[in-house]
Length: 127
Image (cartoon, rainbow, N blue to C red; front, side, top):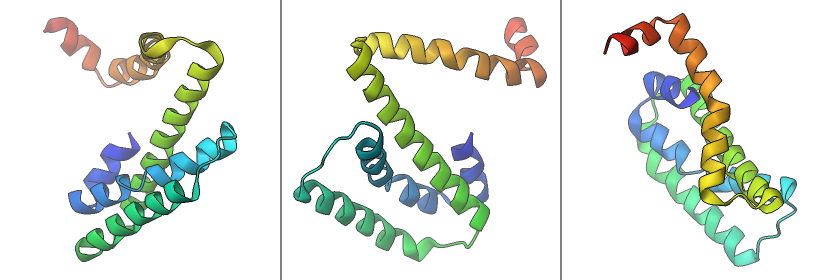
């Protein structure tokens, strides 16, 4: 949801630039939540990729602060999802299919509620 609003408010190149920085929050969250340590080479590589993405996107700035904040929130939330999925796999050993199944099951009410409220469910039933 944050990603769609960010795309609506900012340009595609800026959105892509901010989304390409997702390894940085993923690495930070992985270190905090899973106590995973990264080598200096990996940290420097991630910072280099993020710096390169930032430099590449600087030419397309449209100065929409809300769009930037939503894109950054989308980036952090995606990183959080990936780290928590890896943590669940570490603790529960569900495998890729098990994680996908439970993730879909948990997302279903979050998707059905807006679909019903916005009238999309009746259009889907008519389809």
